[in-house]
Structure formats: C-alpha cells, structure tokens
Length: 388
Image 1: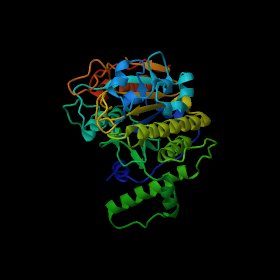
Image 2: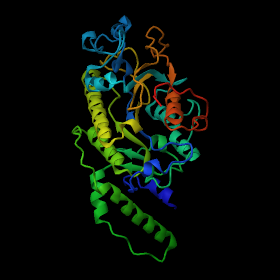
Image 3: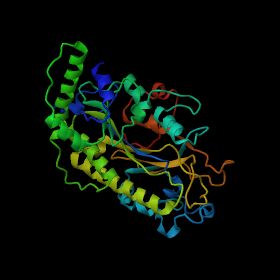
Image 4: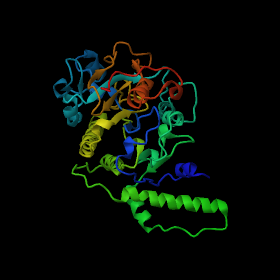
C-alpha cells in the first residue's frame, strides 16, 4: 500500500500539511492554475429549481403548483420574470455586487431519476447509458496533477462520499469531524517499527498523517460568525482548510434533505435559508483570508423536481434545475433560458437547456486553464460567467 492509496482508505481522517507562505503561487503544475480553489456544494436529494429560481411571471408556474408556488409578492426579483425564493435573501448582496451567477435549465440528455444513478452520472460526468469508475475531477487531476507539495488534491467535508474525487489516483481527504480528529492527533505518538516491512510502511504513513495534521491544529481565529447549523459547521471547516494555506485544489461540502416529496414549503424554505446563510459566511471568511477572488463556489445536485406538485404538497424527482456559481471573479447574472413550462415531457418533466458538463468545462478551462475534453470525454462549451 502506498501513501496515496492509504490516504484514500482513511475516510474519517483529516490530512493537512502546512506549506511556507506564498507557496500556493509557486508550486503550480504547468498549465494548471491550482492557486485558484474550487468549492463544490452538493444539494443532496435533488433541489427544486422552480421554487429556488422562480419564474414568477409565467402563469403556468402557479397553475402547476396551486399549493406550493411562492407568491409573486414574496419573490426576490432578479429581473422582470424571474426571482429567488425569499429564504435566499442573504444572497441578494452577492447578486447586487455582480458576484452571483444563476444558471438555469441545467441537466443532461436521457435523464435518470434514481438518486444513486443520477448523482453517479454527475460525479463521473458520464453519459446516462455508460458507467464510469472515476470521478470527473479524478480524471482531471490525473491529466493535470496537483502539485505534490499540496497537502491533498481534494478535501471532502462532512461526508465519506468522495463523489467527483472517487477512483484511484487522487489524494482525497474525508474530513468528517475536525475537532475529533485534532484531539486524536494530539494524543497520537509514532509507533515502534515492526519487523514486517509492509507494516513498517503503514506505520510511517500513519506518522506522516499525524505530522501533516499539525497544519490544521493552529486554527485561524475568524472574525466571521458561522451559522450554528450542520452546514454552517461544514462551511467553517472548509474555511479552516483555506486558512491553513496547506494547498488543496478542490473541496466538497454537502447539504442534505432536498428530497422534498411531501410538505415541501416549510422544509424547502428552511434548507434554502441554511444554504444562503452558509454561503454568506463562506464568502465572508474567504474575503477575510483574501481568498474570495481566487475561489469559485459551485452548487450541484443529482436532479431537480417535477414541475407539477404532487398530492402530498411536495414534488417528485424531476430533471432540469438551477444552480449557483459564486466568487469574486464571477460575472453575475442570469444564464440559461427560463424554464419551458409549456414543453414538459410525457412525465411532466422539464427539458434541459444547459448540460451540467458545460459547467464542469467552465471550471476546467476557464477557471484552472486546462483542457476539459479528455476528463469530460467529449467537447462541452464553457459558460461565459468568469471575468478572467
């Protein structure tokens, strides 16, 4: 077992090594600008795009959702036809600052409505009829390696699921409980070497992990107040990773609960409020660190919800949805056409307008400056949503 495989096997362990100041700008792989960080926010369960980015001026919206439509006078208007759910009010400052891109109609051809299969498609950037083992970022990092001086290629916060970092070849760290790991790492001591060469290797790797973790022990004292929620704690942990200056190309943070089959109004509002408050805190922390302009935040989910509400005042698994892209280098605005509520398929699902791999191509080509065709196994068009 080598160190890379060992790191992939220790799902609950955090590994962060401190690099000298300024190293993020000095250790770039040729052609890949990993001084720029990517933070993925997974909305687990399938977020209802129609009640997130609301086509309030379309009469069919209220007709399809007589019980769960958001009233027009409550919508936070983005333009004369679309607006945000009122629970997303904390994001309006980023919208007004031109740092929030709202991307509508995101999906893929021949959609699959199984949670497990559809998120697998998103994580691997596969076609709906093919099954791949590696995450799309695993393939990207294989083609354009993250500097070895970085503590890790990627960090997953609050979940053991590696998602886009799955498969062999990435140094991915699952950070499930920061404080618990730090407490354990302080108690850990190097083990005595054994006569077994394989065991000696593992013991040395374990010692390296303990040593590397010291980069996170000196936690940054943020002025930013993080929400007292599970998602807020995950955002705080992600901000600590950024503060450590250890060198990490990408992070993934998850917010669960979006499978709103019943009584959606209250539950969805609560989730969107948690999301918005967490994103605002994340931005504040990154601004505090001087990292807002070098960080791109992207939301994603396995699918959206059906256009018509169900008999339980909820929504069933659907297709196209809306997602957010935030950052200091984002060109804010509405991207993608309004949802075509008059073009639902035979199951009542929306047609997609933008392939989710167009967003991935934006990350790879426009953000990191690398080729996207090999990792995405095809040509996809980056969105014009970044200033640089």
